[in-house]
Length: 138
Length: 144
Image 1 (cartoon, one colour):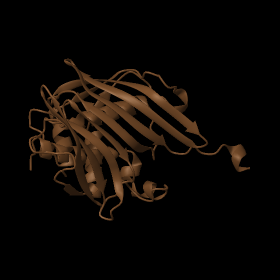
Image 2: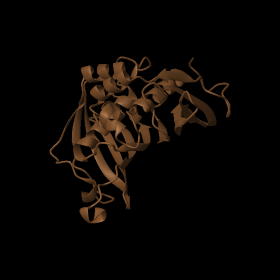
Image 3: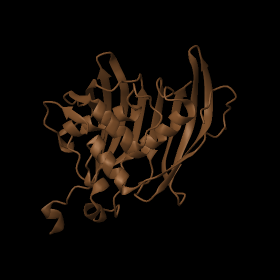
């Protein structure tokens, strides 16, 4: 569901999106991005680290967040905007990640409006995977 | 796969200081690379004439890995991005990276790097990446 600035108010929730992260998705992202850090793709290596198993690339999780914003505001909305994220916990293969957003502020500009949203991504156990803020231009 | 080229030898954490500017690198964002990226992340939003914005950011990360030794087990802890304008597939990207923060305490090692990604038309993406590198192995004298 695409949103426009008209009618939006601080506090409004963005349509959430959920994604199942599979190891094959992580492996495919490794091939596409060239990031073959074994923490993502080598179960034996990852099991011997404090993380205890493979984890998804942070940039893969961010791609999901970016797509939520694009689906909500349109593919052009990120241009002229920004995204600031802190990764709080790893996303593991088998996790279902739910990305939520909430409008924080709306600023009118001559060439449109800047909408700043807080972002939260949690797994199926309610654990926070990332937090952040996005500013989009619509 | 994102192909990054450059003349630099990757540097280790210990060789860096805040303010260090890495040698520039280039990344070819071919149509095949963009398509592979779209399929990998399940992108259904970006129009065909544009590369997904996060694909540009992924190029930045690949460029960083070309100039910085990123040990296995390195954790990505934060990311900031300013998207300036769309980039079409079949674009040649120029990446410049600079260390903005470096911390080393006991066995904790953190690095923050700013990356500017440009096309022939100018900057397209500004990003800042924060990495925590794995604990260094104790020196032999520490285990005796």
